[in-house]
Image (cartoon, rainbow, N blue to C red; front, side):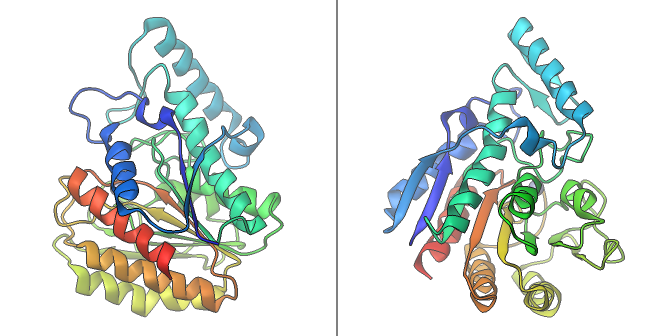
Amino acid sequence: MGIGLYHHPLFARHAVPQGHPERPERVRVIEAALKKAALPEASWHEAGAAKEKDILRVHDPAHLESLKAADQQARKGGGLVSLDADTWMGPESLAAALHAAGAGIMSTRAVLAGTHLRAFCIVRPPGHHAEQARAMGFCLFNNVAIAAAWALEEGGLSRVAIVDFDVHHGNGTQAIFWNEPRVLYCSSHQSPAYPGTGEETERGAHDNIVNCPLPPGSGGEAFRAAYRERILPALAAFAPELLLISAGFDAHAADPLASLRLHEDDYAWVTLELVKISEKAGHGRIVSMLEGGYDLEALAASSAVHVRVLTER
Ligand SMILES: [Zn+2]
């Protein structure tokens, strides 16, 4: 059944200030690497925009309104609007963010329909820091949370797992699903680091959150141990009907924003372990969405390895 690769030209048109790490080149180098890899059984799809009701399953109406107001301001001024020190909107950012969220829904729908077994969404802006009522950390809407909420309400599922191996904790995803027993959220991340959440003691209202903080300097051994000892057993016990991945590649040793020391083989390893979990659950369905990753070469190589394992297995 192969893998669906979801993209849109708007993802490279979400503007940020000069020198900002979350830049348009990120999606360009990933697309180039995936095309060069000439993966068999990979199909490319242009993402559609999420509808307002899809956004409002996880975000407050006031959040959507505030982004619309910033969008108006950016269009009128023809420039950039700052939401916080890290998070910016240009004239096409709201459209890009709606399509990033839409990519998650469209690919989840296709995977549940059996059009393809797995999907990778090459999106920006990223999503996992966005909370119900707040854009932050380069994120406007929480793309993976919107996909999970869609799968529960429209896809007819009752157990969805989200695994987040971005080097930063997905504070937004955790907050959105803190009180949702139908979602298991598992994160490995550097600590201390931005955004400051993700202690092991943060477990959710239904023991549905598994946080694995890793000290700066941790390498592949510590990363794999966190998965072997905590995340993979929790996933196996939960037996998700769909596995979503917040795929950030900023835990790579070459990344300028953090100091974990992963390499491409660690991303291949964790991807294969997640594939095995999804197969053990009886289906093999995975939808992976791009989050961070700021060294262009490491980002392209790591994404290609991740998608290759998702494709070949
Ligand atoms: Zn990150």
